[in-house]
Image 1 (tube, rainbow, N blue to C red):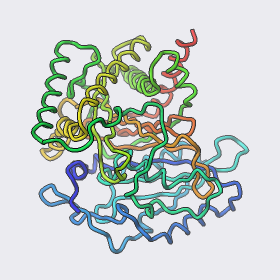
Image 2 (image 1 turned 30 degrees about the vertical axis):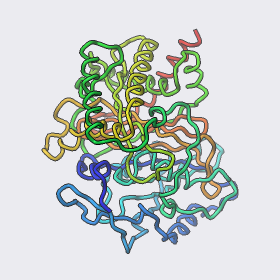
Image 3 (image 1 turned 60 degrees about the horizontal axis):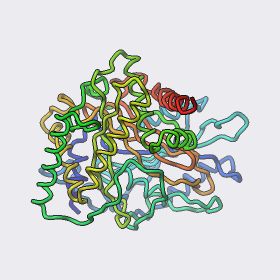
Image 4 (image 1 turned 45 degrees about the horizontal axis):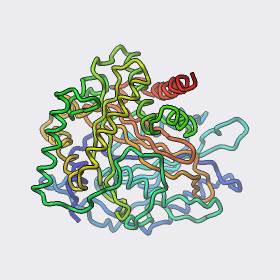
Length: 465
């Protein structure tokens, strides 16, 4: 099965410095009736789950392609002990030790001679509060050629259950990827409105629409239209240096109650608030390093064009570029700049068909494919300074064999010249942030978690005044 360019491109641009897999860290409470050996017993049970469903059963026919083309073939001899691993945190088993381990696991390339996924069970995590029982974690990663973020989330949603009493649940690699899943509602995710024009249009007409859209963007940018951002107009910044293969992963959650309180008071969406928090975090980090550009940072926002009838496999994405207002001191004015820019981008994508949205994404991201092939990746002006993505998750508690899922934190990928990725997932009562960065390019990136919180506190104070 030949991979379409939207999937194969992730393999084409991959390198040791820029692995192209996505992942997730999930933290669980043990079931109330768990024995001392429950997690080890669960691992042993999962080791017997050898009924692999596509795409978990696929490997690359040629690990490094032929003339830039890749295709899948079934792997007749999958070594499950390679893909499913059991680890223990060093003492004292704090969240700090967990994030160090996940950062290391997320830094390594997947083996292209095998199916492109791994699942790690991790024991020895301290309880959230003193006196409570210990916790455990799961870290999973999949190559982006297999799933985009929304597709991976659909698999995860089917892996977990809303029933705390359900036992003997299937392993994620046993879950078929072809059935559609209806996501639970989330508050205005960072994607455009439902597809108004499904189906493929004439290619010539699509190309004309894409070219016209880029011309309109360029004209509006020259005219100084508020909120308009042209791809590749981002300022050079500390966030956009050359990257190495080492990663730092940081994660935290923020309650919907806090974020929605700010959103309602200011008449904006929760996602506008999330973008404002991210803008504040980057602005503060760069100010601390005396490296804030005079021009505003821009963010590239992935937008799902996946329909409810699509399975989760493969990639179905477009993008919009947003002004993050980091040149503005006043947080309310900064938030308004972000809201205006987001609305312009969503309106533009809403006027396109599905094929035009995908074609627009291919057009503006083509330098990311061409750059690595020519050896010049990360040396020019970036398409945007940072990628900020929101992957809708379940809004009710989920369980795996009775173990309550406390949190699910997305870990994403980087490109040369783009040293930070911020991905959000809604789960239960929180918006959960996962920050992935180049460890060398952005030292002490984990401080951005505190800056996210201070950004939210700043808006809360202004709305309470």
